Image (cartoon, rainbow, N blue to C red; front, side, top):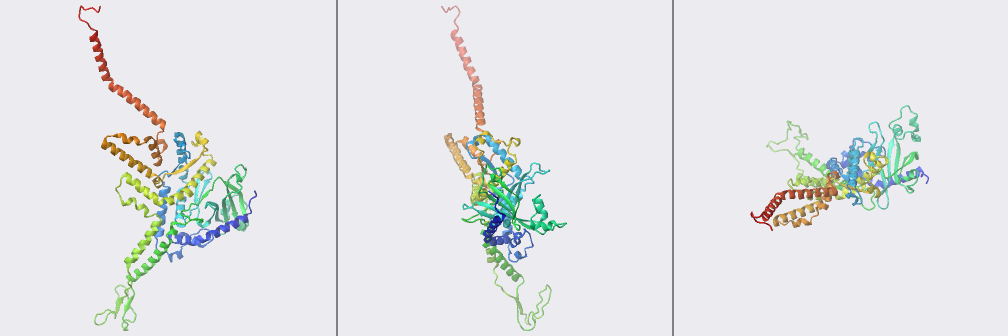
Length: 570
């Protein structure tokens, strides 16, 4: 199938911009209240630039949104991708295969490899993920690219490279199921940057004028768009780019020409996680959009309170018009205003009573701020701090409560961010020859037979909280059985508990490493050795008694066979 005309893609790109336009006013206001540095960027069509945002300072008087956004980002990082722990692991889709210690060990090694490369200094995962969370908090959508960094003298194998892109320059189209199928990412390059990004490619006509200058201008920027979409002519047996289901092309918008050849990917190299969506919603809506009435209201109220405060501290004055003061009142410290009192000592000047009730205003502002913090999950994480003394069971139950409150957001981010990101990372490892015996990542035969099908299990504290109710129920049941056995001295209640099944399952829920858990063969071998040792010990313990009985029997036998002197057996 021939490559479509670049002008057709540009037409589709312009339509995607039109579809997104109704969202932008809300995003602009959310940026003003929560991320002021982005506000000016929404006012222009050019490259992403920061200004002093004087316009924002004229109406955004409260910084609750600005303070809540970093907390929201930290909360998402804590519940989704905490740096101090393995926040996900891989497992075979067929649960029977996970009974194989070799299969479990393979997935543990693969998980370790993913985390090693994610948190490599050159990957910039932490930075990109934090920027993605911030974009989700303000706009409800956080585009992020996962690519393979080219090998360099410092990093000879290459590795993962993560980059968060501003939503301002990303436009989406979805199918009827709401799945993102087309991503248009626009960017601007000057001639120097173009040569660095596309070495060896023909210079677009719109930049040819710069090529004639000894030193090209840094400010003459040209608009380009990177198109990512799923192919309609995908053929896995093809020898060209059609063998990849995802199409990738670069276009110079002003020239309506392609830059470079068409490329392809096994899976989408950019993820576009969204928080909350509604039927027919392409971009979703953010915590900041949910709190937008409160963000605007608290800023307006704070502006009014500031005015009232100025009046209370420096109130307008009332004076008697008798010509003595002539309108001149000196309010400087230590100054004298002649005529300020009459000859009987009565004040000729008094402050105006504005009738301001600061307690009511303060309560209204506090309520609005609490609503904003609720939208950003700030108050959710005060649950554990409410009680400092809790049993282990209570801690598990509190974590389960937290998980329930943030579960919708966690579910969306797992399905639209971390899940697709992990699939992309594994595809990159396969493409670059990392999944081989050389790296200790050769697939076990039984997993090869199952075509390597796997699933992603999330193991962050709050993700595990989704399953802790099972552990909590088991612990409560065990405590009841132990209490019954202790009171009645009858251990039969424990016979109902299948520890051989429960123990490995609980280890999985608590994300215990496979290397720390023995397989069933090892457990049975240990039990067999223990039984043999116990039997041998029992024999040793009984040996004195057995020897005594045998000795007594020998003595009795000797006594029965002895006869008096002179008596014959005949």
